Image 1 (spheres, helix red, strand yellow):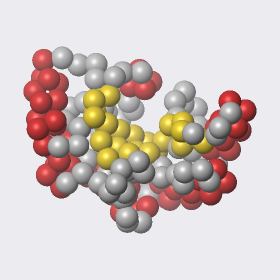
Image 2 (cartoon, helix red, strand yellow):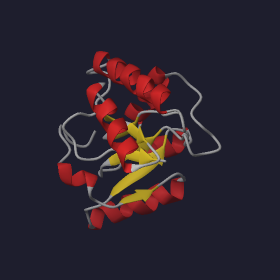
Image 3 (cartoon, rainbow, N blue to C red):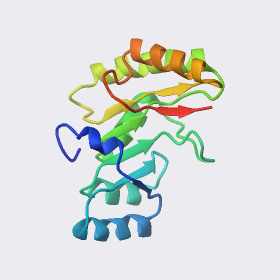
Image 4 (cartoon, one colour):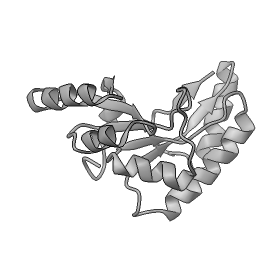
Length: 160
């Protein structure tokens, strides 16, 4: 983790996708001459990419890979360990597309696991809110909040 408490502004900076060694190398050079951006990657990247990302001096968000062909296949412990290996500031909690109640249950489980894993894991978990209407999103957000999924923050991953 780059800092003990990432600024709320980290939520509003642009994030560059990095999933190949050359992407990370270019961003590493860019980070030496400018700031104000972060890196978004997936837990399914190769170990060499994970190592390169861990050395970056920018905020890092890691996704579980739910939208990729190579979804993360391990346990929550293994997923969270991969987030930590990459020195992530934020890690997305896995969700089940189209299954809001199951996603809410998974968020509650992952949040409890993360809380018990402290200080083993220093990233902050990001819950996913699902819905097809603004009312459903608001309800899902509230459910995530009540289950402990990143309370008191302004941003969440939202999908439909």
